[in-house]
Length: 408
Ligand code: HEM
Image (cartoon, rainbow, N blue to C red):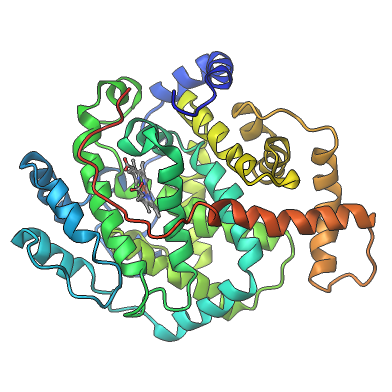
């Protein structure tokens, strides 16, 4: 079970038996898709349920690459393609080259001004973003059942540390000053990820393990991509707002814009990409909130994520403290489902003192209403938690097409 804690998984798996069975039997969507394309960046659309839409433009093409045995050669060529403005390497199969030339184009609605403001926001709020991407979005991904199963049974599930570093690359690239500019890397990362997702759609249905546990025929629908998308910017903004972090409207809009462009570059149709935070929140209430549930696969992934800090040998990043922070961010139901133990000291400390700590940090409260020790600990935590993922970003990271599933 390469690195996963078998004991924790089994313990949680037992407790989850009934819950897991329920989740597996539940219908794909409890309510019919009703989010209106009127609230999307396209402004209109077919209104087709995105659970029934995958990626027509990439899926067949990538499946054919895998079936023809072209993947190792393509991966080798694409290793040299790292910058947005760089020409594609010579020697790629023609249909792949044509697709990538098309897929690397930014959408017409890209607003360079907003992307510039997003950079400012990322710089100002980098510490909070690091913790929130890592512990709110990262841990949430383990309670999105379809994502947890897909990740667990795909090739990447075999070496989770490697997979985390590749995923962290996207979170890192989107926050860089030149993310979508010719010398940046975000376009490359998105196009490669789009190809990887297409490969996974072809490969996972061939995994007996995935087929046994999944409640769908083909993974990673457009609906699923938006679910995961909401675990990222929508969730991050929700927490920043709840913490009372002051964010000017134009910065918050710019942050949203950088993620709208990301969704488009991952192949999501514009009619599913929300055009405002209000629309994003309403879509998330429909697609994300109702699906969150633990699965044995997600519990195993969460356990691995919570132990990432151990290697850094930093006291405030111990598994119990990361667990307490996860409980604080995602709530008791999810934390209990993930078999995260209660923490007698950190749980109440976070509940009572995190809000005032942020207020003092933001200059909104003049007096330190906490014990200086707690303030120091929280500050340390903020700084060091950002390192968990940064430490995984050992360059160069190459996102590669898988050609097989996890070897179970
Ligand atoms: C691969 C990001 C949605 C499942 C990747 C990679 C990135 C990424 C950067 C490349 C890393 C790697 O090769 O390991 C994202 C983002 C998403 C999203 C930003 C949404 C905004 C999803 C969803 C699922 C999913 C919805 C499943 C339901 C996978 C799997 C891999 C992958 C299985 C391949 C791992 C392997 O190599 O086997 N994703 N993803 N992703 N993603 Fe996603």
